[in-house]
Length: 526
Image 1 (cartoon, rainbow, N blue to C red):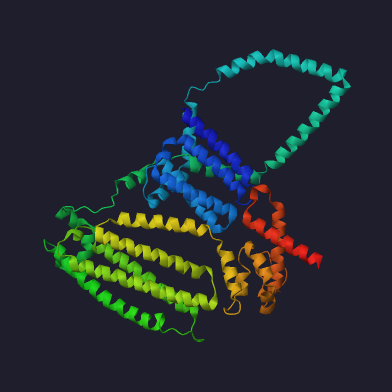
Image 2: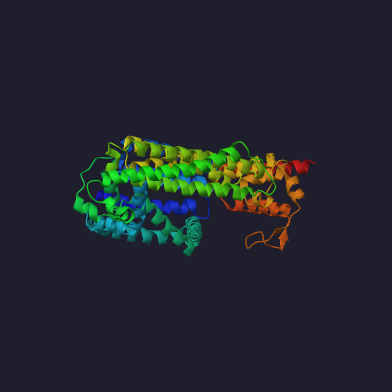
């Protein structure tokens, strides 16, 4: 019962704190304060979770993303912060090993938040907390309060100084309550409910432990199992094999027939992919020359599309053949060799797309999708390595998904530490004489790139391109020049900063304000 009361108090306090810290503010320094409260409340409710080795790594990752929010303040850092916080919460509340199942438990917590909140209120009511003591105290206070009120009136009429003091107190209380009612607007009340939902979803553990129990039952290593022939014939795998292989999928020779089918399939696919890789090595790795009639965007995206299709096909195909007892079949040596060759050739395909992306960046500069391709290639390479480990060491699909998900979290945490918009702007403008600058794209980057653009104002003036007005905040005439868009963005940034308090302080905005103040001072000295 005491724990239920503690949960209600913590959730209510967290909702009020959320309202105070984030109302009309951006995620910045306030995120540090809110996180300190949430983690303190979490480990007060689940103290034993700190002993878990995984929790120490998750806390370290969360501290990194929290620092990234305060320093870089990018959308990616805020996303990484939210993901890492949810993982810390769920791993403290449940037994988990996989990010996928932990994510499902986190979603369940938020779906069941209202039910969990009401359930704890009900438990608190059923506790030993009673109002008898309060009623008894109230009866003892009735006579003293009446006496205080009578003498207060006498002193107020008899002493002018006391009367003036009470008038000042009354005015102060009037101002306080007027501000209090202004503070509690309908919009802010709705924001308070949002804070209650967020805090409750974080701190209240749902009674549904389905995903945690499912996660615990999963294994990393494959075990050889004796299949029930009748049950096997009822499965979807048997229906699929029967559709493709007919009678060869049935009987005691089914495993041998499946092995032969896999060897032939991988042999043909390896030959096909070898042709693709041979052409890429000849014409992309060593024989590429940029021509004006080449569309770099299509050149990269075609290779990426082929890579995605090939990798998905490779994963699905290998997971199908190495899903069960075929891993333990004594004559599966050539099937494994075919799988290893297929994985190696997909790695070669990754390198080919890497070359394509490099040529694209060298000619057109950095952009979100070009960086995204690089991150995707890194994830693909790790995926290929883990598939190799799965086949070689007879691991389960659960192992494959678990390891790759954790690696994706690591990439997300590391990527959140980089201000990609600033990196893009600095890289492209440093090569403004060698790459085709997309000025309109540069003007859509975040506010931290504004000082970089201001130092390269010649690029904006040289562009001489009219940028069509949009439905956004820059539409006050039909078309705008790049310099006009920049000046409006600068003005809007400075105006917005005046509306924020110290709670929204972050290093990125502070850097931009300081840069603008220096340029303004230098212009005034001139």
